[in-house]
Length: 374
Image 1 (cartoon, rainbow, N blue to C red):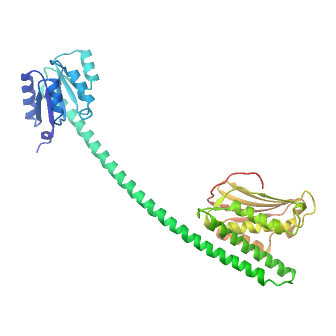
Image 2 (cartoon, rainbow, N blue to C red):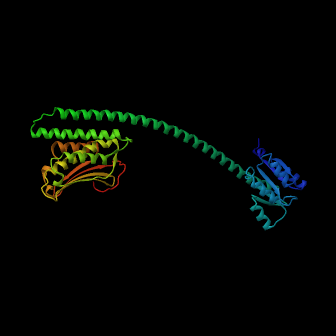
Image 3 (cartoon, one colour):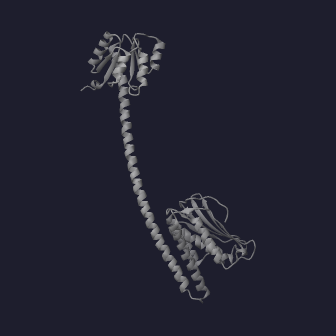
């Protein structure tokens, strides 16, 4: 079946002979034709039937072609129908007025049938393209709607899975924390009353490490978001506890924690927390050796590019003292934690100021902003 048979064309002209000529030409080309003798009759037909194109005379009794076109374009249901004016009047102002009213083309009488058909087919090709685009857009909108619904359902499933995982992780960390607290209690209960200094120091160090592990897990258990752990809170608590348990008075030297708020994921929180504990304990131990007012021990957290850096500095009379630098088991623990678990490195510089730096590359941090010293 010829595709043109599907196109419905409305011809509007107050002269019956013109209607007959136009209808004959177009029917021979396979178009389906309807005719109206006035603008009002055309508007009435448009309310009951759909047309793909309108051929419209300008000079007609009642409402003329330009006014008819304006009314057609003002109605949403018919606004997109292409209107081609047909007139014997070759007047530039009238032609401009016709296009301003919404006409797509202006065909002068007398016309050649070939030219008429060519102009009609041009407008119908445009109409065909517009409808195809509308179908494509409608299809895309449907696909987007379906994909949006699918993503929404997947997000809901993911949220449920994350909620279940959070509950499970909280239970795991709760149990681990309880076990660590139990071990810590056993150490305190079973420790002999009189032991040699080396054993006493060993118990203190071991208890400190157990406390560090327990506190990391406690923070994990208390955290509403297990993806991140508030390491600044952890550092401050470890620092406070170590300072309170130190054998030296806080006035003996300046012991400072430059605490920058930051968060770490659970994969990094535990090993990083242990390193912080080791460095803080080293700083607190060093405070016992303070002999001058300008002696200062400081711990600083910073972000340098993509690297996260923990720096311990011993200044004043403490600088250059080898005995205050982590060694043996202490250094081994810190090194293993830094290099094996966090793929970082530890550097120690013993000079006028002793500097111990631990650098972690490519650790994804949460909140990280400078604050005043605590």
